[in-house]
Structure formats: C-alpha cells, structure tokens
Image (cartoon, rainbow, N blue to C red):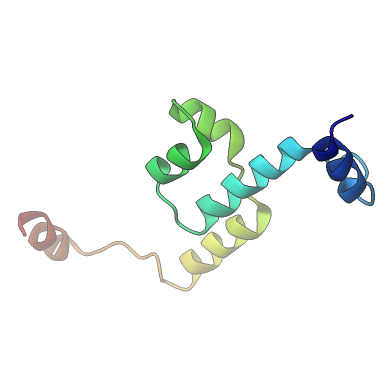
Length: 90
C-alpha cells in the first residue's frame, strides 16, 4: 500500500464510509453555493461537460431553505417592466 493511500485511510478512519472521491463532490457543491460560475467550477474540476458538473454538484437543503427565505422576504422580487427595459437597453 502506498504512503498516500495509507495516510488517507488513517485520516478517514473516524468517518465510516468516507471515500476520497466524496471530497470532490463536497468541494464542487461548496463552490456552487459560494456563487462560483459554472465555467470556473468546470475548469477547477476538469469537467468537459455541463452534465458532468451537474453530477458532482448537489444543492443542499440549507441552500434551498435560504433561497426560499429570500423569496419570502422580497429579496428576490422581480424588477418592474420599466427597470427591465432600461437595464436591457444599457
């Protein structure tokens, strides 16, 4: 067994079932929740397609609740048509 594999097994032993690959999913999910662009996440992860990025990123319950809370407090209210027209033309 290589030293790297041994070190990983030793470090992960308190977390039953944790695989090194799980950290990839976690990192990409955290990048998505932090607002990183798809292009940035794909470049960091080495993904060649949007489908692969979607496979690795997961929306956690906390992020869903936060989005719903923003919706209910009016932070995600749509712009009125006048603002949309002005922003589109500029």
